[in-house]
Image (cartoon, rainbow, N blue to C red; front, side, top):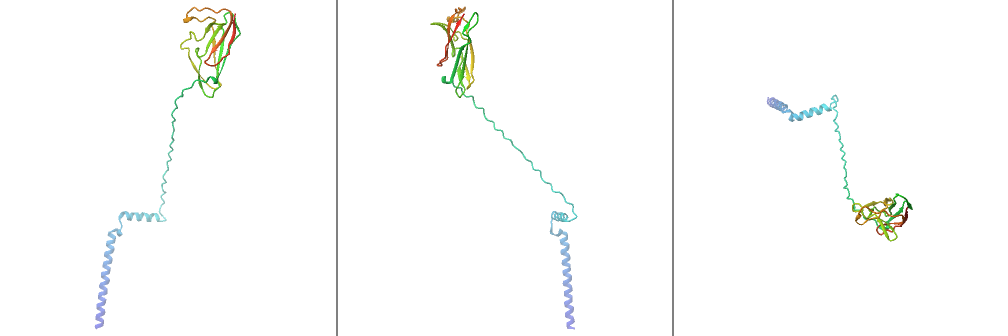
Length: 215
């Protein structure tokens, strides 16, 4: 009887312990179910989506590749326009000057004409005086000064020309066959037939004289 009593008591407590463990386990499961297994709803959705994507039967969603935009910037450099430099006067040694009468004799009402040329032989562009006062044509007969282009010239009588290397400046001076008058008075006296000498004064440049005849 003593042994059976102890066995009965131990069996009773084992049944109580098993029943208590079952109750605790059931309570734990209920609590876990109510709390969502300890996860936030967003986390559960993420896990569910991840599982769906990982599933072989899930549809693949193509990834969107961003489009690269290339912007090309063009820079334009504007260079300031350099101010025009002052052109220096020509050096006399750089000027080759020509002077000649178009004929050796002028008859009747034919007017004497003289052709003047100036050529710059220097390397740079230079300024050369070509007005009646800078290129003064004088006509004389012996010691008698008959006519000069500088007298009674229009305006100031001065003018300048830019001469480039090797490009000649050409002009023609015409004599009206009349003598110059003091103060540019009119009428002027016509020159008589005879031999005349034409010369040109161009600063320090020496120019060959021209001899011609009026008939």
